[in-house]
Image (cartoon, rainbow, N blue to C red; front, side, top):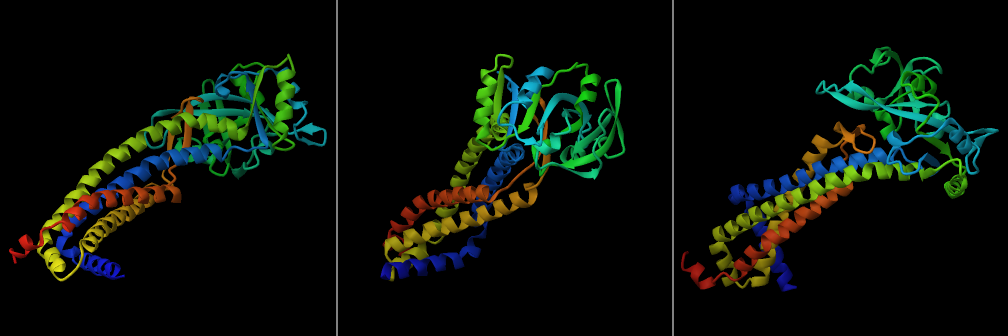
Length: 395
């Protein structure tokens, strides 16, 4: 009990004296804050991209493509094959009508608002069931396109990121002019990065005949996908890959998310090592300046354990202060910051927001805690072993 009281007393004394060591203390706080800021900023990109991709996915919606396709862009299905899918067991029906959307996926050039450079934007031809298949999609401005006309509805994120996509504007792709008639909201998912039109109009404009690239279907239940998959795989007229929408978007985002994390974690580790040296320098400086104070405390009966623990606590306090500062800056500056990037499998832009989540902030604070403990440990040992008689001679 006496040791605990000593630890509390010495720790409070150290914290009260921090203003006298404002220079070295600030270096430690800023160093740790920079680590947490970079960590949260870089990984919030991966978290935001992953959230955008996976929020479009549902376990009761299936995506059917040609076997071996890495994305819709390199898939291909005939009209007859889409009819086979529509009549397969496991597909949810509205009366006698299956809830499906056979779709065509092409990529077109649109200029970014920020840089005025061309970007590959997904242009999707859909059937009337597209909104029924995707439960989170709704028209938020204007109206739905009319079948058979060169009309487009654009995702909210695409409209804010790219030029010429406001409702009422006309845009030219190749030899065809299209009119923007509406904006749709998809709950922040990847669908909001796309432009949609009538699939038959898109087939004619891009000379795709009567072909499609994917079919989306609503399932009777999440378990129905096994029945659907087995039925289609056993049918010699079609060679499909059958995935839940969640599985499909997970595979689409996996590579880019891993790449971002591959950059983010090593960068954070390198910066953390630098911050540890900064903390070591700060705490060694603190112990050196407080040599007489520590010797006096030892002469008054304070044990080495109290001195050592209080030094580590001081280091942890400074590190956590830096962690809070870095996390706060990351949240204020990066959370919700919208960007677009090229998604490799689909070779098109995905618009997403950085997401500084509570989980990222907790991981950042854990990193700050480790820096504080490691940065304070060796100076704490030095403080505990400081020769009392030698320090007292300097008084």
